[in-house]
Length: 166
Image 1: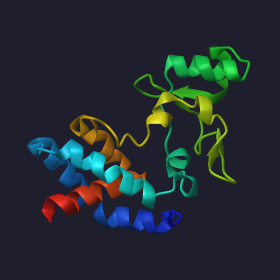
Image 2 (image 1 turned 120 degrees about the vertical axis):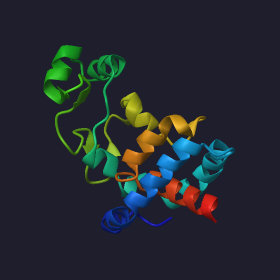
Image 3 (image 1 turned 90 degrees about the horizontal axis):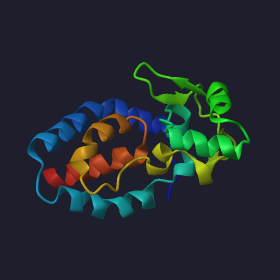
Image 4 (image 1 turned 90 degrees about the vertical axis):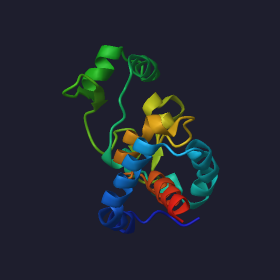
C-alpha cells in the first residue's frame, strides 16, 4: 500500500471532479441494478490501496457534526460539562449543527495523523467515509462532496465508473 500523496490526489480531483460528480448524478437518476453489491465488492480493494493514516485529509479539512450524544460522551472523557466542552471546542453552523471551531481538527495529532479521541470519536467520524452503506443511493450526495476530500471515496467512484462504462 502506497502512502497517500495529497498533492497528486488534489490534482486528480481538479481534473476529474466534474466527470465523477456527473457520474454520481447519473447513478442517482438511473439507479442501476447491482450498484450496492458492486460498491460492497469494491470496498475491500479500496482499503488495500488507501491508508488513512498517511492522509487524514478529512480531519485536516472537514469537521464532523457532533450529536448531543457525542458531546455528552466526549465531554465526560475530558471531565467537562457538555456546555463547557461545547464552548471550548465547538461552534454552531448556519443550520444549527455543532462543528469543530478549528481546522485541522483539534483532536488530530499532526505528527502521526492519529485521533487522540479515536475510541470515543463522534459518530460522524466513525462512519466516514460512508462507503459500506446498504443503499448507496442514499449516500450519493455525500459521495459527491467527499470525492474532493477522501481518496477512498474518490477511488470507489472512479472504480464504479470504470466498471459500469467498461
